[in-house]
Image 1 (cartoon, rainbow, N blue to C red):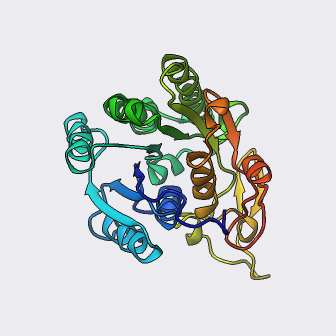
Image 2: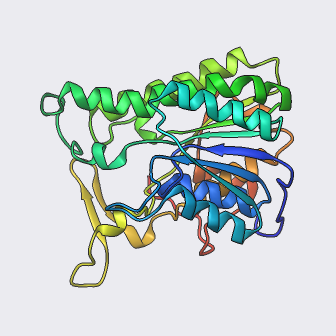
Length: 282
């Protein structure tokens, strides 16, 4: 993909939860490919973690795309509906929806905990933002996407099929992947492609808070899962290159309804991370 810039010129995309992290990386890659990208998130001013919707859109503009910041809480259905009404008014089309929004700082409190130590409010937080919000955005986006035979990419995880983090996390990712499958069935005759994408360990702003050890390496241990060298992790832009590849693929419907590892898509489409690697950390 590095040698094919602007492959999405004149396309319009939405990336939810793109102030930072994976969402930001995806938004930047869509912008670098020439798309107009609506960047949503709650961060209008920097907080404990860096990043705002405005900062992301400024970087998109620098990369050659057009960034449009939208301060939006995806738990507010009315706000989400207004977002897609605005897109119809301003552009009359939508080609890509990336459902990425997720409350990672909140979820981090329960990493490695057995289910009896993960309170019901954690279930509500995870499903409200990590599953329901994806359904809601897809619901309001569907008419536009059907008109353009567009793409829905749900950012999921290998936790959908094996134990990761805790029981609530895994059940939510499994639910998201089932949502992908069932939405693809509903959209089968429309030309809209729906996929789940599985990044590996991604070196987001949250993980960048992990300090280097005595050997200068940033190592994180996830209870019950293993120890990971964050310097070998994916950059947030690696999943973005997968989204660009899918959006530019005229045969992407063949992938609809399924889950795809980012590294496997890199092998098939021929893209790499920003440092030239194909990271494999999941």
